Amino acid sequence: MYSVILTELGISVFDDEKLEKSFSFSNPVKEYLSIKNKESKLNEVINYLASIQRGVSVSDDSLLAILKKNNIDSQIMEDSELERIQASKPQIIVDSGFASNPQDALGKLREFALGLSSSKVTEVSESPDLHIIQAINSLDEIDKIANALSSRLREWYGLHFPELDNIIDSINGYAQIVMAGKRESLTKQVFEDAGFPESKVEMLSLISTKSRGGDISDVNLAIVQSIAKQILDFHDLRKKLEEHVESEMETIAPNLSAILGTTVGARILGRAGSLKRLASLPASTIQVLGAEKALFRSLKTGSQPPKHGLLFQHAMVHAAPRWQRGKIARAIAAKAVIAARVDVYGEGLNSTLLEKLNVRVDEIGKKYENPTEKDTRRPESFRRDGGNFRDNRRRRDDRGGRRDDRGGRRDDRGGRRDDRGGRRDDRGGRRDDRGGRRDDRGGRRDDRGGRRDDRPSSNKNKKRKQFGRR
Image (cartoon, rainbow, N blue to C red; front, top):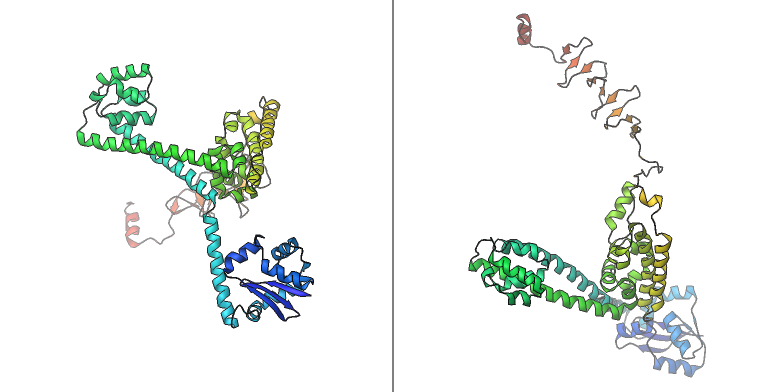
C-alpha cells in the first residue's frame, strides 16, 4: 500500500519506504494551512493517485478528507507509523528532495515555523471582533474624558455665569453657550441654536441680565472656549463610534446584538476577549462579567455573591424589580451563550432566541411578582469554615487558646493574654511566669502592691531611700 505523507514543505508518496513521487509547496505556509482547512484542491496529487489505482494510507486527517472527497481509496495510518514518521521527519524531507541534508531540513522547518506564527498573528489581528472591542473601549474612555472636561468647564465658566449651571443639564448645550462668549453677548438666537425650548430661552435671557457672576478676561475666555470646543468634538466622535459599533455588531454578531443590544453586547464581548472565547464560556460566567471584585470578595468573606455584572445595563434587568434581577440576568446570559455560538459559526440571525427570552422573562415576572420572605430579609454573613453563622461565642486561635470579643487570647485558666504572650489578670495588669503582676512600665509588682524592680539598685538610689527621697 502506498503511503502519502504530508510535511511542512510538501507531500510525498512512498511505496515501502521508497519514494515514488513528491510534490513541493511553492508557498509552504499558505498551502499547508489551506490543506489543514480542507480548502486545497491538490489537483496534481489527486491525478497521480487516481492513475495508480491503489489504496493509500494517509498521515493527516485533513488530507484524508480531501482525498476521500475526490473518490480516492484512502485510510489513516496507524499510531505507531505516525509516531515513526514524526520522529524521522527531517530525514523524510531529505529523501523527498525538499532539502539537501538534515541540517538544511531543520533550517527550513524553522523558517516554516516562524512564517506560520506570523500568519497566525496576522489572522488574529484581522479579526473584526477585536476592532469592535477597541471601539467600545474608546467610547468608554471618551465618556470619562468628556465628563472630566465638562466638570472643569462648568466650574470655570460658572465663575462668570454661575446661574447657568443649575438650569442646563446637557453638557453639549452648555458648551454651545460657552462658545458664544460672555453673558452680555448671549441672545435668544444663541439659546435657540443650542436647542433649548422657548420657555427655557425666556428664562435664560432673563437670568443672563441679572447674573451675579464676575467678569472674565479675554484670555481666560479663550481657554474656556477651547475646552468647550473639545467637548463638542468629543460629542461628534462619540456619535460616530456609536454608529460604527452598532453596524459592526449587527454584521459580525447579529444574534448577540438581538439578545443583549449593541452597546451591552460589545461591552460583554470586550470583557470576554473575543467572540470565540465568549462562545466557550458558561452562562454563569457571562452573568457576572464585570463584577469580578464582588465575586471574589464573596468567595473570600462568605457574603452574598453578585447576581449580575455588566448585564445590569440591559433594559430587562435594569427595569425589573430587585428580587427578579438575578433570575432575569441568568436567563439573558443563557440565551447570550447560545447567540454567541450561533454567531461564531455564522448561521445568521435566529429570531427564536429573542422570542424564547421574552417568554422566559414574562414567566419570571408572573411567578415572582411579589418578593418572598427570603428576598425581603436582610442577608446574614456566614463563615466558610463549616458554614456556621458568625455568633458572639469566643473563638479559638491556632495555638489552642480562646479569644474573647476584644481580640485578646485567653488561656485555659481564664486569664487574658496579650499579644506578647504575658497573662493579664482581671484588673488589667500583666503577670509574668513567676506569678508576679507587672505594671505597664515593665516593673514586677508583689502581692501587696509594691513595685519591685528587677534591676539591682545603685548606691545613689540607696542614699535616696535612706533620706526618704524617691
